[in-house]
Length: 557
View: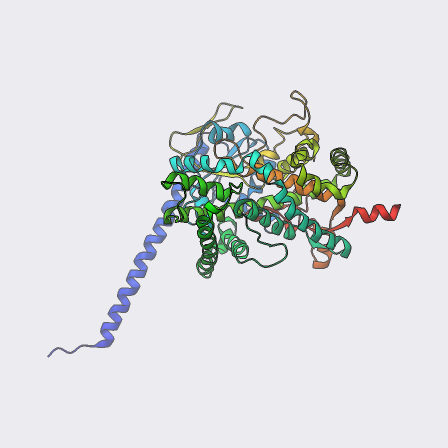
């Protein structure tokens, strides 16, 4: 008879468990240091070959430099500001440079030259960086137009182009103006109250309502009430931001996958139900200009014998769901921020604001309250506003909303025209840093000044913009699909708002109330710096006061 000692068995099992944990830990540690060695040795090799980069530490790489920069920046400052900060510290790094901050990111080639960016976005188009797909996945799922490549991307981009064309956008102006009227009423209420309020919040709601009308023919009413789709989407975007923060603790949150799954369910339930109804009733509607209808109509013609199928297959349904969510996110986020930044810069430069108002008076007449009616009746009038367009373009130069992130390939080099040096891209995240390009004094005279006139001068003038230098929507085949829509929306809102209201930032007053020191909350001397929230947004949602010009004029009379 064999006697079993349970304590001995338990001890043996525990010992085996600890051995397994120890073994896995050893593998993890070994893997970490092997990857650390690879990252540092790769960058040291580039350094020996004379590639441009800040001073490189053999163990820490460029982490000390990045940490010093972020320590000097105010809270939540956008990561894309780092390229400009590196150039300011090391002025000779004014076209491109490598950064090694592993394990916080891959080897990076940061590009701040228009000609160099053109080489991997226009002359050739490197594939999108996998981190973009990872960021968008909780929002769009697996297949969206931003992260597609190859034949799939070309096919669907070609199909979506008509919906975002300048002609179709012009047809949508009356619809857009309807939502801007609601926004104007909300702004008027704040002018009457005389309170400090965050201008970006109602602007985001307005942009969401506009994109909902343009893409889906849906009235979200986000400006006045709760909408389950927009609520879930905005919350999901906030939970997606962890991948964009410099603080590694942002990555550690056990609630994230649960919340993301819940938000995805909320969004998908709403969009799937709407898509099903919309598709089933397509044949009941006359030809429309709404973007989803245009795509559904094209799909129906290609995939049903009589072009009138009432059942959408699962693959196409999943694809359309992803695009709808993508367009809602991309169509409201950066556009709203750009509207706020434009109003802010005009408020800081009264001479430019006066010139814009004179232009609007000349085109729309002296009755400032009639502009919405005129734009609904004659939307093409907005194209006559050349200074308005110049002011918006200059704002987007100073505050570009995003950047482009591509993945380098073996044998693909960027050639620096200033010295002929060939910069390898293999295994690198290649970033076309729009902020770094737009604020680079090598390419822009009076680079830190708000000068709308640079967009009105003839070629040969000292202010004339450098070729391919303006890139808020990127250039080349992968440029922003919705740029015509965004530019139209920004111009419409700014034109309508500046005719009736004066805007004044209230950062100083807001900081005093919060006990904050304004001097510690600036980037290059600017309090309204860009923070990280998807694209670049104004810090603290831009606290402001505003004044109704009509009331002021009546009091003067």
